[in-house]
Image 1: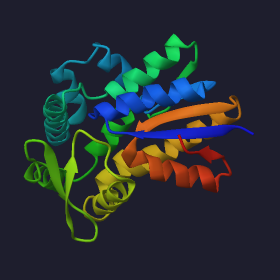
Image 2: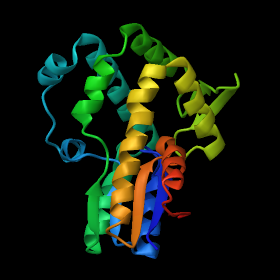
Image 3: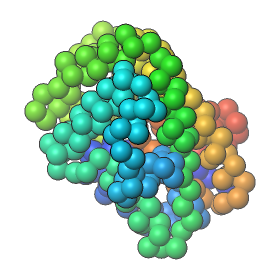
Image 4: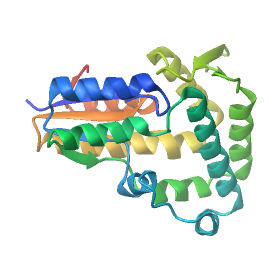
Length: 229
């Protein structure tokens, strides 16, 4: 029976790179699926569109949110000593080194950005303020759905229960952004993984920790077999 092994990562944690390399080397899957689309992969390889093109496509408020979050991720990456997205690039490289098939399973980034463009500007501004308010030198302070303040070490993958509580906060406080960035992409990637399960015996799926629980739930409901890494 086909198996899907989900590896949850943080895009700016060195331990994620080690975990990705270790799991792929140990499992030796038939396919490695990564939370990227081909456009994002090419951008990470250095073929990005100009800022002016992005501004024209996204509009001012979505462009502002996109730029601030991108700069924030780069800043956090420097604090953690790692380039954002290195976990995904490691997955691609590790697969290619072993001759393993690679699939980019995320929704086209232009569709996701288009969905963000349609969200009210007030929700975008509230999200930026929410994120920036919690920054410290080496951590992020965030409020969970239960009203608790939780400190997240940016150099590590947060525990599953913390991720789930933060996602619950995003769903409640920023429903439009949650839908565009999390829920819709979970559904899209789960469909892609279900198709891959019909083609390959073992698939390792490398995804951000925020997507792991949603993917596991949707795949279980669809009758796909999930295994721990």
